[in-house]
Amino acid sequence: MAKLGLAAIILEGMPKDGKWYSIFIDKDGVQFEDAADLMGKGMYEIDTLMWEKYPNKPAVIGIGQAGEMKLSNAGISVNDPENEPGRYAGRGGLGAVMGARGVKVMVVDDKDGPGVEIANKDLFTEGRKKLTAAIGEHALTKKEGGLWAFGTNVLMNIINEAGGLPTRNFSAGQFEGAAKISGEAVAENIEKRGGVGAVHHACHPGCIMQCSSIYPHEDGTAFVSVIEYETAWALGANCGIDDIDYIAAATRECNDIGLDTIEAGNTIAIAMDGGYLEFGDTEGALKTFDEVRNGTPLGRVFGQGVEATAKAFGVYRVPTVKGQSMPAYEPRAIKGIGVTYATTAMGADHTSGYTIAPEIAGVGGKVDPLDNTDKAGLSLTFQSATAFIDSTGYCLFIAFPILDIPEGWAGMAESVAGVTGLDITGDDVIEIGKEVLKMERLFNEAAGFTTADDRLPEFMRDEALPPHNVKWDMADEDLDKVYDWVHES
Image (cartoon, rainbow, N blue to C red; front, side, top):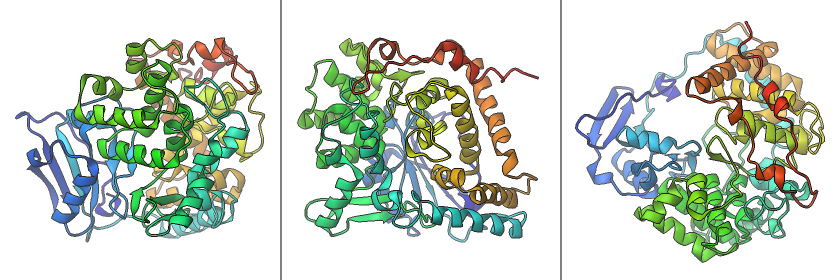
């Protein structure tokens, strides 16, 4: 999009004829085509068909069957350089929104596009060099660092050791099979199986962190890309499953149907907790995807996510905030991320204020994860910085180096100033981020949300989490402090 000079694609209204459409965008404009022949197809087939039709290997943005059915857990797929549909705008039901617009797929061909107009090339270059140097220096993001070697799933053993790995539907904080589904285990299988398997794989041509991977079948042919930490946890530990090949198969199902892997894994865990399946049942878990793909009554329940499934099976332990299920960090054992879960506009969103950095990884300082002290302030700071980063289009993982290396922080801001022409420095990042958060908060208020929605589920106050035997004990008053500044003049 950026190479075409586009900052966003906006779809307004719905087709008056009730038809489904595909959209093709290139330097010459926009074309709408009837998508009747694409309906009912999964994203692997869609991506293949689009590259056969359009020879310049364009970006393919689409929805699987879940989006067609407008299910709450439907995401939007974006292909990677190998044309794998493994890059998802997964959370929040965006696939259902795209489906409601009657759009099956958008194809963006940037060939011969004008590129990005840079307001101050010297400042941009200076900032880019500082940021790139910081990324190349930091232990997590440098070549042969943690993300490069094992991807995001480097966190599996770390979070498990900290007692913050949600297990068997958030009933424990450690999983005995964590090592079998960790980033180290994935990398070992990739090396052993060979073929097209790859670690330190780039999710796009310009990526220098290369935290992705291609996971192969035993014969070395492509299986799935990529098994992220959140995915391995949701489909694995939270379901009591330690089979990495099952997780690869389930991930591929999610990618094809168009489901967010976090919500899908949590939904299966709810079905297990409710007695529909046994924890650890890989065969039964895979069958749930057939139900969703085929749009059966039960499949539509599963496709609506955790809260709908919990109601159907009468489950008390429902790990959601504002209707969205929690990701792979137990808030009873990692208090700051619990504040983020509770107060973020989206609800249960770790990426909006990743306090795991200081609480677990020691990035940007070291904070005791079990201590409640000033976790409201910590979360707000991280939410503000994240809002700025997200608004620029930068990968969120630049947060690791820029939090530890001041030149990286300054370079990030300078690169943004260089592109946009804005008169900003690193000193302005947090305040600009807070303005973004304010807009989100006011939108939520207009939609009817109040501070009463900024709460974690009651079972987390009632049930002590092993191994630390801790409960969620953050005072509501402390949660309310996170956004008490929004209406100040």
